[in-house]
Image 1: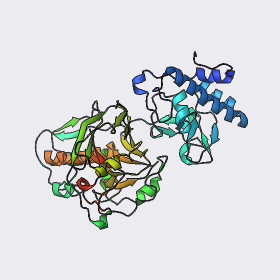
Image 2 (image 1 turned 45 degrees about the vertical axis):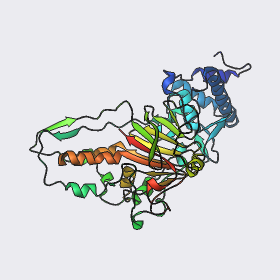
Image 3 (image 1 turned 90 degrees about the vertical axis):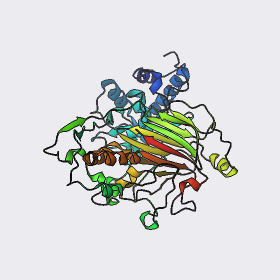
Image 4 (image 1 turned 60 degrees about the horizontal axis):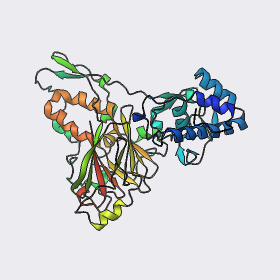
Length: 420
């Protein structure tokens, strides 16, 4: 390690010797855990050393240092929990960077390409897992597992055009999908359909929510309760299985001011990306709105743009899409997939406060809808494309509870997120 500073303790050298290095630098940048490669190899090595020194100092006080070495050297999950005190916001600061501690050390010693805590799940025997929200948090990298993307079953498509009469008509299904998903058409949902506040446990700073609280907010019989495996195969029809395939880009982002699109679409290829208001050049993991010019931009829009700040981070992990508000101001999201999950009106706009995050799309839920509607013909399937468009507004909200009922009349900068 050419970057190791003088007088580095032997135990720190040994622990750094187990550090995993990314296969390539292309997919390692922008890590939320703060172990990204974007600051250059030398600076990165120094930061990793500081992160290890910080952990060693804490573990020496509690006598857990030997257990850490044992866990890393043997790569054994049957080791004890290795804990450090949990901070008020759950994050750990090393030098000028902040990140969730279990993400930092899992990325350091196991998965260099780790982007977010959404990619991790604690093993059952871990007593101090991060999601348990105890006063101590386990940073044993072998007490966490990488969340794998579920494999979606193929869709059985009829080779002929017969329409099944026993399935619900298309009109019944499309009633649950907003007719105004395509920007810039406005929305005007009834007041009684939009909840004053999100259901309990709806979003949190660390992304962990209670399944029981979530289920209490759902309406019975919602499409989210279906799964492709529960749909009985149709007999007497010639069916052809069509498998899912991941495209090169998982989403496309279009930026609007009022009803005018500004700049070119951004195509996301990385599992984590940030949309912010700064003026840095955009790259595969960052879409900067500050450089975009608009001759028709008015003073109100200009003032609002100044409050975008760090913006929003989007994750595509394990077949799910999450939105995390990094800005000092809230962001507002209209996701038909999310609204259907909780039995809300499809045009409901959700507020995500700073530091909070929300699951805005789920592949398995969408696959269930697709499997249900495929036998109804092309039109029914095509209607589902509306479920893949998500509207997101910075700083200011819109809808029945706001002065701006129509999205095209609000002065806030906004984005359209089209999922592929």
